[in-house]
Amino acid sequence: MAAGDWAALLEAGEISPVEALRRARLRADEPPHPAPPEGTGGGRHGRSAESSRATGRPGRDPQAEKAAEQARRVEAVLAELDALVGLAAVKRMVREIRAFVQVQQQRAQAGLLSRQTALHMAFTGHPGTGKTTVARLLGRLLKEIEVLPRGHMVEVERADLVGEYIGHTAQRTREVVRRAVGGVLFLDEAYSLARGGEKDFGRECIDGLVRSMEEHRDELVVILAGYPREMDWLVDQNPGLRSRIAIWIHFPDYSPAELVEISRRMLERWQYRLAPEAAVFLAERLRSGEMDLSGEFGNARGVRNLLEKALRCQAVRLTDRHAPPAVELMTVTRSDLEVAVAQLRVRDNNRFSLLA
Amino acid sequence: MREVVVAGAAAAGKTTVCNALTPWLQAHRWGRGLRLLDTPGLDDWPAADPGQRRLQVQAIHRLQTVPLFLHVVDASRTGAVGEAAAVDRELAVWGRNKPGYAVLATHMDGPWAATGLRVIQRALNPYRLIPVVAPAAQGLGAICYFLRRQA
Image 1 (cartoon, rainbow over the protein chains, first blue to last red):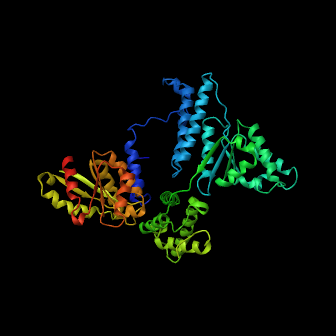
Image 2 (image 1 turned 90 degrees about the vertical axis):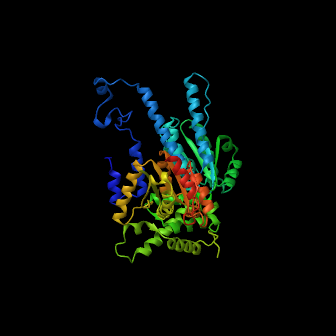
């Protein structure tokens, strides 16, 4: 970016003062003559590493370069994880897994015995606590540290696995596992597999899954997700499953302060902002416990639903205005939020326990 | 003449602090060598008025060059919202690179101000945090003491 670009953009009203401050600071932090990025081999200019050697630049160790590149990618995934609001215990657990795997790899390189642990996991927690997001990041992390070859995530639920007639379930389960090999198989609401009773095909699916977990232990990570109590019950139904799940991660409900932070980030991403009095209103509502967004019916997803509703209320408010300025198109007012809360209360009276 | 930038979010109380502080500085010889630069409010969104935006650009240029920086944060509003505004968090990062930086927590007589003070301390973690009620002249002595040590 050319020097002073932030000033032009700020003056044109295309970026906010906060963004201008950030850009100005980053510009000031840059070295005066930035070196070309390492590890690209000058690829931007179409030059190979060989031609750079020909120009007299010192040769670089390709292995060290590869390791540095890998470390950078791992750090990028961990930074994404750290950017998630809250989830301190989960983040610690993910770092533990990463450290353990890396040490085992180093032990193997040093000729020591390394423990080949399967990394199948169970994620317990209420909806909207970040289980899917973390699973996706974990898949990428395991790819970067070379545990999984592909690191993609296949997200399935009971309906994707359980068949309609005898033999159909095993076939569907095999197909799903085949798609997931090399990455993460994320099974949401896993306890529903064991719910149907003795004659339900769900049991057949669990057996098939346990077999696949063992067969593909080096190239597949199965993550079972669901409510804490139901997950306990699920593994009690099948002892083979309990012994194969090495890691249990609990996702706690978000605190009101974390929910406020989540709502702020969501709006920032959607290029909206809360008017100051709307921010006060939202924080008060979340903090006072009037709106039970934590627990079973809410968390981040509950906040998102509320904000989406508020955005629609804002749109309705602005419909009659002729060409409203950008600032108004961005601003969610207190009245929008009040209307959204009132409408959600009418619709989901059993979900949101609001004060009358 | 040394300059002191007074910056912060809109309606944080920058001008009130400047107006209240100026007579205090004028009363001392060291204070007469300081000039307070009041800046327009910096927000989390673009200002509608082009003139305001131009002033904001000038304010950021000033922030880049002037080593003394008083960061004004509305403690009452911060406490009510429960978190520091994005602009305040960004300005705190700027402040850490300045030799003379203090956060002035204003509107300490407003509701939620005590909570706001704790939020500011935790979120911005400044070297120097001064609670201020500018109309009642509370905290101005502490600001003068801070500025004198920098001057």
